[in-house]
Image 1 (cartoon, rainbow, N blue to C red):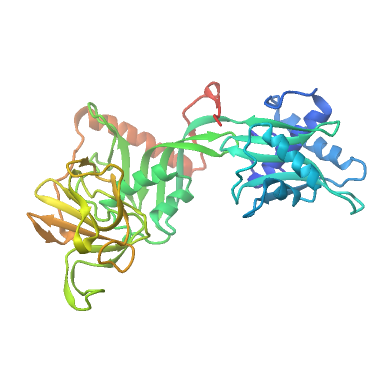
Image 2 (cartoon, rainbow, N blue to C red):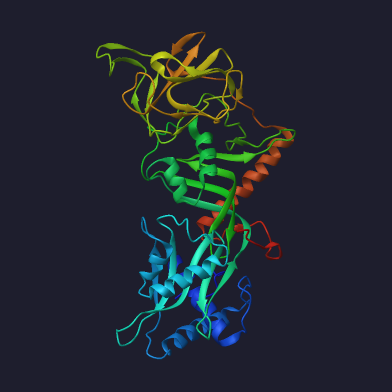
Length: 452
């Protein structure tokens, strides 16, 4: 059974059990230890031994309530069309008591009216031993943020009260290793990365890997990224992607001296931004290659002068390389169309888009991996997909045959500094594989309360 302290990470139980135990603990503190406090007050800091004793005493006290059973832990999810009071009442308590719980939450400025379906909270409820009569609420915990929660408990005189509990957060560097299952995006999210980290990872690998052909279920992947984490292990936010490896291909984040932005380099110090990205959209499969084919609408064979990627409606489309937008408009059967001019006489085209990125216009400079539009099915299209073209000197060519000059190669002091940073990341990864803990980048003195 998890400790009651909401700031301890649950080890042997699920998160909802952990938060409910926090509610029961606060109730016990209120009944047995402390005089009434303001609703926003935080519980006193307790040692692990005190917490273990408190947990045991809370359930003992609840079990000793006249005619009542040991509290039962009940997770609740608000159903479609249901009010918060109705959801609380489904635990078996009286409707009047459920309404009182909702009023108590409202007193803490929690919006109890605009409740969305799927909202989850945890309750501790004690039922009569006789099996007759209404259950009694011991505690209710509702998480309001990654590191904040509201806890409703019953005072010694039976009155309901609410506290806002805020965990402290710390900065750490996290090593996450796993396997590819589904898309690269889905696999990275499963390892704890957020959308920003996943987007950067997709940009880094898009020119080296064809996501539809090169990735296989079970392929190994490793991420190293910064994150802010609560004491209970919940990720509050993630920072920079420091390292990524997929199928043995490795890239490290490094900011060269004099550069205004960090870049990604392979283990030899070669810039990742070298060449045209082979797949400018994540999670796609190739539905039609460059070459002769039977046109799905016209019905006869003709030259297909690009590559089609089958992918979901609204998926972001990124620029295949640095360049300048020369067209962002409607263009006949291509529907919504974007064309970008790159170095060495190359241009890339993107068709059948649902919409352009906000503010995108002709003359705008874009960077490799920057979102320029979203997948759609405009123009002569039978379903959502991206039609991707490469032009050289005004003629369409096979995107798979495009070669561009290599990017920056580090040397001198930059190379030495990069190698030192690479060695530090490699050490972190080896430590994690040996069962090590995440590396904290802030000391215990730097821990700060989470902002709700």
